[in-house]
Length: 309
Image (cartoon, rainbow, N blue to C red; front, side):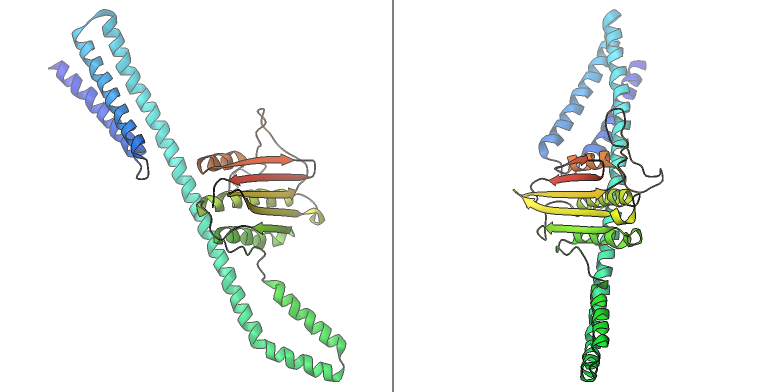
């Protein structure tokens, strides 16, 4: 009776662990080979547990001790690995939620800017007739200074809401225009050289997350130096079906690293976003890579997304 209860308890606990593993790792888009490997691994471990139970109940001495050790090791290792996987899945869920939130925020801002520009264009077209009449009247009176002043005012209005990023790629335009708009208070100058197609074979959330956080780091570094030196350059191009992104910013020359040479953030603990190490992990999972180089005045982040067209 005791042996039967022990066998039921051991198998019940193993079935619970197996069910938790399958729930975590059985993904809809996972290929068939990985699913079968998962099932095969569970069956092998189940066989080892039952072989251990049989040996434990029908032998003694060294074999009994070895069987007990095997059962305990499988369960302890299974519990620890399950906890690790749950933590990893939760971190991924939180990262995906963060990236999706950022994407929606930036794209929403992009559409808001487009609406503002369209409204401004309609207003300017409505007033254009009046401006022409004013210019004509001042020309007839020979008021050249008045004409020049009016033309300058019109030119300032035309460039007031111009979007600097206009590639047609919603994700890229949304991030860059959002960052440029929100950096006006810092008086940072931007130089953009963007030559990319409208559609790319990379998730918009990943593209927004990587580009947005690199831009955040660049803006944060620029804000620590004198206003005349605040400059960020963004270059994006396609070469051999790969997307190359190069973000270069001036900074104060201070770089923090750990004993292993990894970069450390200078942001406050409660600051949003994430650093180079998280960007590296995100790119590694989404067919990309990142490299950083710096001199005493400039910091450059080079990113590659592979096979995007």
